Length: 311
Image 1 (cartoon, rainbow, N blue to C red):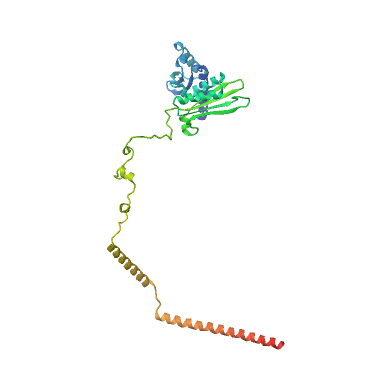
Image 2: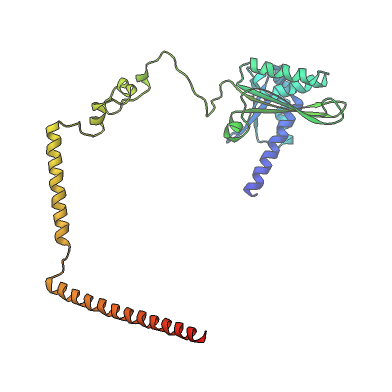
């Protein structure tokens, strides 16, 4: 058999055993079970509000349960251990069965829901939620919720910390489903924190670089101490300022001189040749422009004379 098929078979068998215990041990306050397979057989731990009723007179009921587990469910050498539930109001399975029985006896759903969730919180629970779904008061089904305290719905805490239980109330109008979720008082949530009063801070704050807690709490120093602490130098005297300014001026002059030396200056021969060439090009440009302007003037004068003759 494949592993996936084996997981399905184990889950189905576990559900069938749980339903069998719920039917047989309903009056004893059945509160759930834990099944563990061992080399010696199958270990089953039953949680009940009244362990005496589960065991029966002289162990009659427990022997009957053991034989049924072997014959109907095929368990090898089942070993049943019964444990008493210390606080039934904190067991979601027992609370759901009680609420379902109360609804079947005619309790109004609001009164039953508020009474039940108040008892859960009085028992010390951190949070609880009750959900009733079905034809609660009329022909149309609806959902009613009762919340108290703090409850988790998603994530790993909802699976590991929250205790869930389901019950059923068979009414004349139809079946009402009862779902109960409880966070027990000893549950440790990932977002829990504690506040300590009248304690020494040194017990919880580690020293940093040999500094005491008082120095850390005082904050950063002010003035000259703050400047020296962060690596800055303290202000110098007037004489030191003048020496510093003189040094800076000398450095600036030396840098300017170095840059001036790096600049290439043209020689005298290159300068003379360049000047003559420039003067000749300028004269040529002037002669061409003057000749063009003279021709334009002569053309305009000729045109004016011809217009005058025509008139």
